[in-house]
Image 1 (cartoon, rainbow, N blue to C red):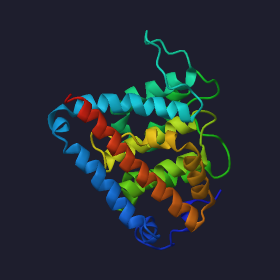
Image 2 (image 1 turned 120 degrees about the horizontal axis):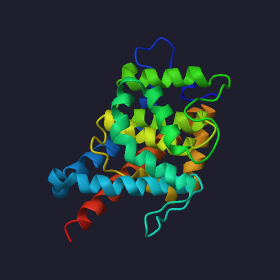
Image 3 (image 1 turned 45 degrees about the horizontal axis):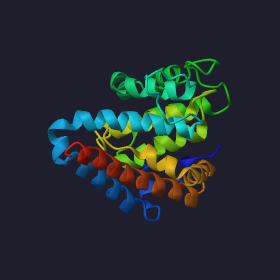
Image 4 (image 1 turned 90 degrees about the vertical axis):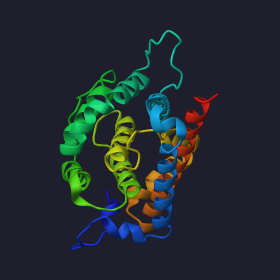
Length: 252
């Protein structure tokens, strides 16, 4: 399946740099970066950011589970029986532990995320599908994540999210894994170092647009890739507003 690789030019120093030249992308990337930065400057988040991050993590997990067909509600007694929601919550709780592995060995991190996300779904865990192209595309993505590009963080995060969704490297739980990986990429690139934003809620509210934009990315067509990057940047801005709402609630 063709992806963003059809847009980048062979021989360029930075393989993702051409994506910045797509219409509207540079401005959208800058707006997303600034929106998330500003929520980190919220007076609550200057010292009490951990409270915002904890609530953001739960909201992100619930929305991510719902996007994969799970429920959003957590039972009052805290016992989660739905396998998709349970997996999403396990993944959310693990991101701090998995993050160092993501920085040095992202494919190992993805395997760990899949073990957590798919534990109750059956099938082989932590091992990508033996389909043609899966291994090579994962290797390329790992190279980008570990220093193979210097494009602004929101753009790399969009590529991580879009490529994992398009590739669907595992038999189950690909959506939960892809969205968790995008959160790790947001932390690693400095876009959202404290993981305060909740773009997953926007993706859930605009589920049809989310699916359509992802399809566009998967085609490798420049217009489709542009649509996905712009959608993802819009989700980051909306995720920053969600985080601001969490912080504002802490002051009332």
